[in-house]
Length: 457
Ligand SMILES: *Cc1c(COP(=O)(O)O)cnc(C)c1O
Image (cartoon, rainbow, N blue to C red; front, side):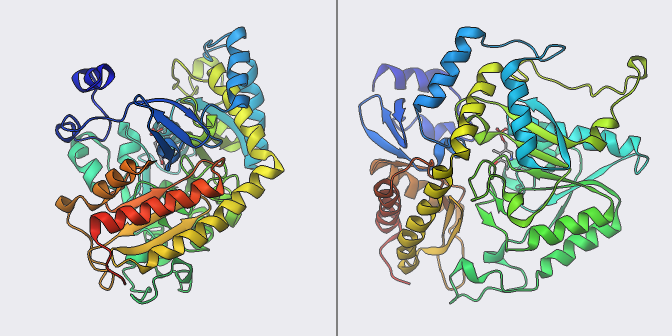
């Protein structure tokens, strides 16, 4: 084992990782990248099949992003946003507000997805109290919700595996059924209809559950990951659900917090996923793709109404008392501006559309495998759900480690992604070529066959 691997095993504790398993295997030590390709210390090449946990947009080592950061670096790397302004953060705020559209008017910067949610949560909480709507504001989010790992963001989450351990530390939030069609409690999807595109053909019975909840309590806000719930297993909501729910939220008087940390910046087709259904949230939380996957940075956009509730004389202390050391960081902002310019180029959208078509064509072959229960795609987000029995949709047992083993087999074949339980996500960077896309899916198919058998459905 080489020096770098040894150092890692001796000193580094990895996120969301069972370290006993980790230290048994030789880690992949990545040393450089170019486009969708990553290279390890031994010179092995890999395709970045999940955009480095859903962050990268335009590929690694992109000349335009490198240049933007280098140029900013020659000016200044970081100055505080506490009482001071800076150029790239101001330029970026204008772009974000214009793209998000009314009523979003103000940008509060922070460092990552969790803090973007934390900010929205605190603002909504305090706004609700000041407006007299409620003295003890409550929050509603979806079953399987994931909004980050800080205590506030964890409180909004509803993935038992991640969140239960810490329940003693968390504040209580309510959850409501998510429109997870593949395991629809109303049994709207027949086993033989293994095609996600048929899911929309229902009356959204699940919407009634949301309506019932919202009429029972005065919520400060409902928090949603619009159209795709990432960490829940790339759960894709049926067309129209978001629009209806946003109208119900609005009618109830609650605020809508849209968590586009994963779905933002073109990942689902439009720049922001909510735009696909014309939904206008009161808070828009952005992170992962904001800097093109280069640097940790986040933004919480909100309305003038919320902002105004924090205005007052100095000694009234209506100030929003929250902030981080690296808020509005110049290097991150410069990267974000460069990434934004690339994203808005007409050929970028065209390229993403082509990638969607290539993916559809390639993914089709997965339905033939008995171990594949569902193949979901929205924009450039793909979730392939592995099942023990496709007819009953019975899941693999945890100890089978089906998702982990398939991803290990993929890595051996040169494609990197990380499973969510038994769901294998593919989120290719937007620079991925057609040939690379085909290879990603082919490697997934071969790995499923190797690990779970070549049985046909
Ligand atoms: C990743 C993610 C977060 C948390 O972001 P971090 O940068 O990891 O803190 C929040 N919400 C969603 C939808 C995410 O996918």
